[in-house]
Image (cartoon, rainbow, N blue to C red; front, side):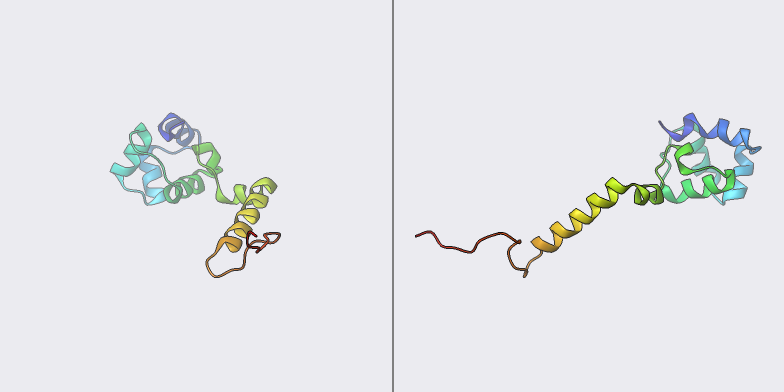
Length: 105
């Protein structure tokens, strides 16, 4: 889903025209026009500005809030496993636990 599919209706339902949303967020006309029409993808930085002005979560704009990802226990577990893997594979560290250092006879 691109933001152009939801932004105009969402903004209007919260009492904002495109021009009013530009003023409320500080986002320039050409940039907002690109979002409004769906010609420009919405990034996290401006997505947060728009979501804050409208009082809605980023998910209503088709974006994922990084805080939502941190709250997901599976993602937190995967990040912990990835951190451990990187630590074990970092140059200058010993072999991973359980790896035997033996030469072939």
